[in-house]
Each structure stands twice: as structure tokens, then as C-alpha cells.
Length: 386
Image (cartoon, rainbow, N blue to C red; front, side):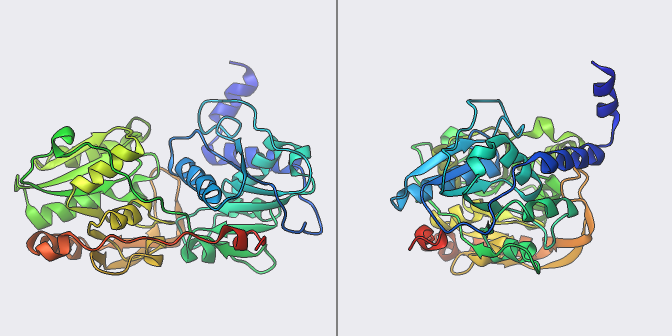
């Protein structure tokens, strides 16, 4: 290891992050001015190969555009932006067009730098942003000068992104594919046929404080104690990268004989099969930018018990939706992703969540609400091409 590398590694994470984003913002190609008119072709740049929520959202966006007859180019930024293994260098054809860059504000100049000056010149650049708090961190400011427009999946995210003098912000919901569960059933997942199964789905690397599986364990214990006929299944992945935060969750889960942990990456079809095999989804998140698992459970015709705050409240209405009350508290995150004490997020009421779980378990009519179908956004209109 070189002396410079050693010095770099000793710097606090926040200092390294600030230095990296300042450096890439200084070198990134500038977007065209005045704003180019809406134009084809459309290229989506993002984390296509990443096994993360942002990766899944990028793939979902590209698929939704194609379903509406738009030819879509792909530029994978997973390797260049260090979100996973490196693949082929991203290539974007030069000339006019629209570049949808599905990375968050601080990373946007770095994304443009990775794509290159020729890829950015003359194009309309739209940043597709996701955030889970009502305000943006200061390091997102660099992203505002690197795009002509911002797309946000929910009003909650859009409100955080709007600011005087900033680029226009448009709410463009993600397309929700109709779930196609695989043939797997309860036996395949080791779940007994006669049990009432509560499912919690989360990525352990995406801030356990925000996803709040400890709250799910507490609410389930209040609702059903250690009753073996009531199982809480924590479906997660990435626990090896979550450190001490995951250790606390694992300890709490091990203390309850009716709490199980599935630490595995499932195919989309197998995950939908697991959701369909469950009786209710429990999401006591402190904040969600969107809430894909909630929407997918609704599409499958299963009830959801979820915190009644943040992005999921754009769509979480109707039969089978049981929002949980909360109070707003300062956002504190030991994993440091959402450590913003000046901002607030929700602290869901565990007793209210427990009561909702007991209600679903006791009322068969609540257990099979009508499946919901979310209409796709009009992408041509959103792109200004209609």
C-alpha cells in the first residue's frame, strides 16, 4: 500500500466522500445550455448489474420504457461507480437525445464523468433520484447543476428535491410489473402450512435503522408472543456487510422461537412466491422513498401493515392496507447512511402494529383483499415527447 493510499484510508468516511464528490464534480462534463428540447433516442444509465434496490429500480425503469414502445439504450454504471463488479465500459451514442441517469444527486457528476463528454454533449439529462428523508444532505447540491430535470417516484421524494432556482421536479412513479410467482410454496421455504406467517422484507445494507426489523420483531412479539402458530419471517440479504447493526437484529431474532431469518438473494419469481405464501407483510420502516415490497404485496392480493408515513402513502390505500401510527423523531442511523439529526423520520407505534397484526389474523376477510393493479406512468408525456 502506497503512503498516499494509507493516508486516504485513515481519513474519516465523510472526508473521503466529500473529497471524491468534489473531485468528480470539478472534472465532470457540463450539461448543455440552454436546455435541449426533448428528443430521442433514450438512454438509461444506472446500476443495471447491482443487486440493490437502486439496481432493481434502474432495471424496472428501463423495462417500463420499453413496454411503451420506446427504444432504450443501457449504460451500466455498476463498475465505474463502485457499486459492484466491473463490466463492459458504458457506451452512449453521441448527439441529441435524452439521458436518464438513475443515480442519486451526489453521484450524478461522477456518472457523467464516467459516461464521457461525448455522451453528455447536446443531450437532455434527467436525474432519477431516490431519497428517504424530507430533506436532502448538503452533498446532493452538486447534482442540481448536473441535470436539466429531476424525476422522483413519489411526492415524498419530489418534495425533498424541490428548491427555488433548482431544476424542475416531476413525479414519475415506477412501473409495477404484474407479479408472476414461481411454483415454490410454503414447503419449499420451510414454512408450516397451518401457521399464520408475517413477512418482513429488507436489504440489510440499506440502513437497518431505517428498515427497522427490530420494530417488526417487537410488534410481532406483542401481537403473538412466542406462539408457534404465528411465525415472523425476516427475508433479507447482505447481512455480512451490515456489521454490528445486524448483530443486534440477529440476537433479537434468536431470542424468539417463532422468528425466522432468511438471508438469501432470491429470483424475482421466487420472492413473489414467498410473498404469496405469506399471510401479511409487515413494514415498520422509519422512512421509505417508495416501498416496492408494499406495492408488490398489494398486487398479489395480500394485506400490508406498514408505517403510515413517507413514500408508500402515495399508493397504500384501500382494502387490506393497515397504516400504523407514528411520531416524528430525529433521524439517527448507526450505519451512517441517514445520520441527519436535523431531519426527522417516523417512529412507528409497536402496539398499534401489534393490534393490526392480531386483527388480520382474526378476520379472514382481511386476509385476501382484491389484488391491486397500478397503472404505469405515461413515459412519452413525462419525456415531453407526447
